[in-house]
Image 1 (cartoon, one colour):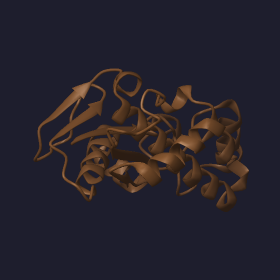
Image 2 (tube, one colour):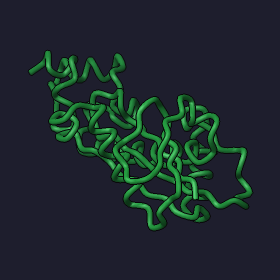
Image 3 (cartoon, helix red, strand yellow):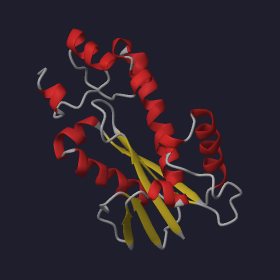
Image 4 (tube, one colour):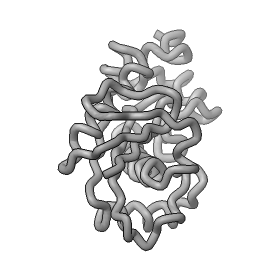
Length: 185
């Protein structure tokens, strides 16, 4: 039982970091079609997301909040969210593969795979699940704080977002320890 783990949202100025852990079925008909979520068109990403939710052996989604990111830093918050997603699996994997160059503190054998979201199907599936969930969270934040247009840029420091910050200042969804936000406080 191999679990793949990936994160979405380390770089944005707002919103949580979201992680997913996925154990795929060995007979999954979509094996070979999973890719890094950034390389999959939104319509196909949603189709794959629904397939994963329905047919994966197990999956779990976790996050670290903006407050946790500000308290312990983005790297440690990402590791915390990854650990939570692995611990949230209803089936314990025999091994965990994590996209990137670091592994969270786990009680299971784990390995970091640089570029794993493009080479390991379980990691790619986790990338898709985490991205869909985080994008939905940012759409919900957009309804609470429409001036920032979170649904459009997902919290990244785009020109539109930076202008909204200049005009309105940060809201509670912004990461106060990130340099562009910290300069405004």
